Length: 61
Image (cartoon, rainbow, N blue to C red):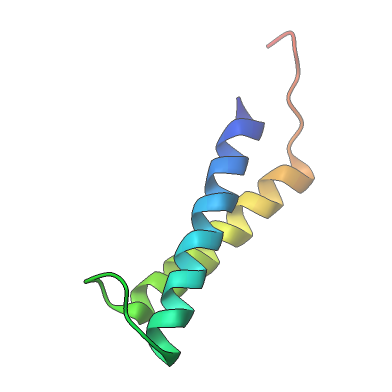
């Protein structure tokens, strides 16, 4: 379960990070602030990667 959440956070963070950076340096594809997307994307990406790296799913619990 933790691994699935970590994958969702990682992929969502990558998408938000890409859209945010594209919004800062080029076309803004969404109506949200590109800086907010970049910051949230970075936070979600780092959280997802760290969860994938350090958390282990234990099949008995």
